[in-house]
Image 1 (cartoon, rainbow, N blue to C red):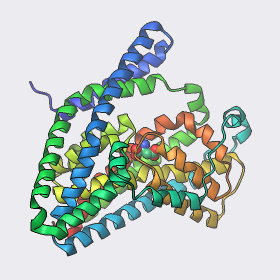
Image 2 (image 1 turned 45 degrees about the vertical axis):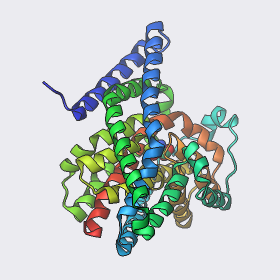
Image 3 (image 1 turned 90 degrees about the vertical axis):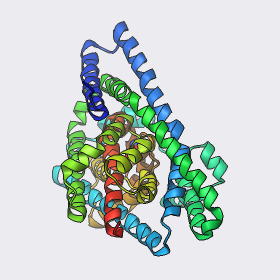
Image 4 (image 1 turned 90 degrees about the horizontal axis):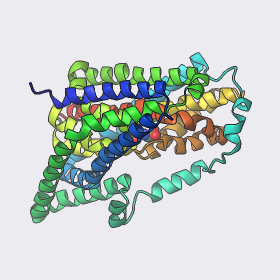
Length: 409
Ligand code: ASP
């Protein structure tokens, strides 16, 4: 009997969780467990490395070809508009949900920052004002393409490939050969992704086992309420709000969507990186969910670095959590500032593990909260990053389906 790759991945994830929990029970210092965790970390890293290997050529060719295939100018214009509109709308919904949940359940009330004195004492937050952040974000958009490609700077690659795609459209027939070359390059990359995916069940198992074995239970229990509020709200956004939005626009049922997107969601959960997951996301969207390559190739890579619902929700809730810890009441205007900076922070965060933690500093500082509080959030971040990355990637896939429908493809 042949088990489908989808089921193998699911099974791998379950076994990984089981193994991780057993390792934690036995104790991570036991020599045999130590060795097993070492082996798993090698295997997990290998899987992520392979995905990253194809990431850069894949993003580059997929955006350039995607844009070039949107031949008609009016169509290109509409795709842009609907894509950005969807990104802003879904992130705004996520932020509203995160803030409402944090206002309702008030995690952190009753605890105090002093409890975490040791954590925050040895930590100096990098100062990052809003203006500085904006300047460095803009500056990072236009980069020497060879440098961006070599450094795997996804956002800068996206921007250059967009320009190239538009030039290919404008040039038309004249550049037919280059377009064909890129198209074939893209097909080749997707073939490599197909091969790498055979390792996904093992890679995901290894990553999850390692993650669960190395959590600190004491810390988790002292922050249990916050962790629970963030996880439940993020899942609510991912399993209720986004599927409803999808259904309202496209009439695609949640079952159909989740069946087609499972590989990418589990990979995102295990790797905590939208960028590393991108090859899998594109594959799911084009092959299982049947989004046209011209739409998927544009929306998904852009979304992987710009559209982050999970991160936006998390940062908004975390800002209120830190305010509660510090005993500061944020009024309505301050919460609006949090909404705004959170959106910018989520857009600016690259799709790598714990990227949200770096841009979190800016959100805290925008309303005068102590940036050192990030030190309290860091140790639990690896755990929370799993669910938020999964929802980040889900948002990109739903975005491509919604845009396809709105453009009338
Ligand atoms: N890890 C997230 C992602 O790759 C970003 C974040 O830290 O929130 O989507």
